[in-house]
Image (tube, rainbow, N blue to C red; front, top):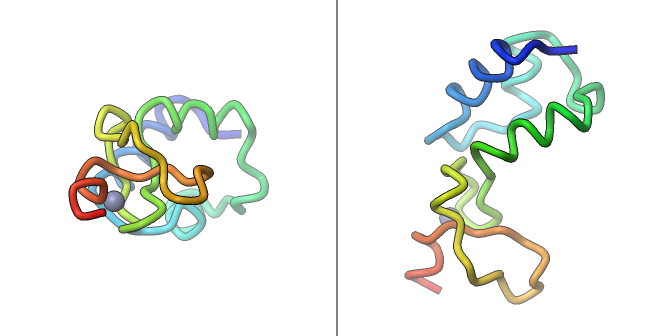
Length: 83
Ligand SMILES: [Zn+2]
C-alpha cells in the first residue's frame, strides 16, 4: 500500500511524461500495477490522466470535454484541437 507522499511522487513523475503507470510503479516502488489499490487509482485520477490518443499524462483540468469516437476514452485538449 502506497502512502499519499509516495503517490504524490508518482504523480510528479508521470505528469508531463508518456511513461506508463506500470513501469513507473515498478521502477519507483517495485509494485505491480495490479497491486495498486482502487483508492490509489482514484487518488491519481484526481490529479492527472493518461490521454488515450497522445499517451501523455495531463492535468485533469486539461481533459477534453469531448470524448473520442468510442466515447470511452479520455483525451486531452491538445488532441481535441487536432481531431
Ligand atoms: Zn492527448
